[in-house]
Image (cartoon, rainbow, N blue to C red; front, side):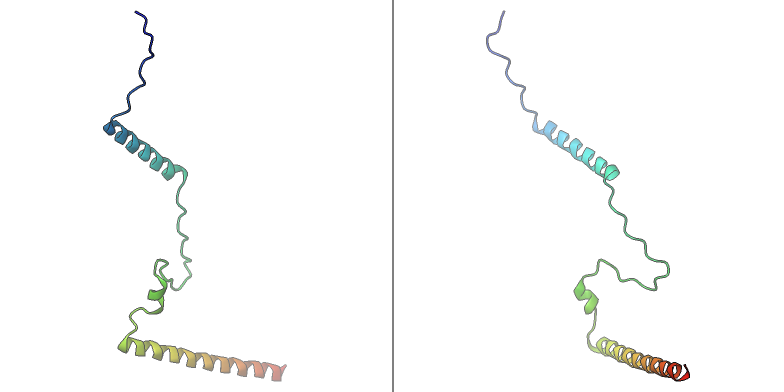
Amino acid sequence: MFKVTPNPPNSAKSRVEASEAKKHEDAATRALDYYLNPQPSPPEADKHQLFIVAPHIDTETLLADDVDDSRRCIALAISRMADGVQLLVERALDRLEAQETAAG
């Protein structure tokens, strides 16, 4: 017998089927991203570099890591010593420069 009305549209997928399809799609996307869009590798440290500051440390930690009481005094003393050494080196370089100009 001939049917006048068309067939009804396909029923929507069940929630379980939709969830599984979404999981498969997400897995495929992750796999493609892993192989086709690799993350840039971090730059290798120079083997002649003496030290490196960890790149993930925030600015506040870099500037004020545990500088209270006696540690603060030690940090200030080291800073003063470094300033003194800088003055000594600059004076020595000035003397060497003066000797070279006098000799030449």
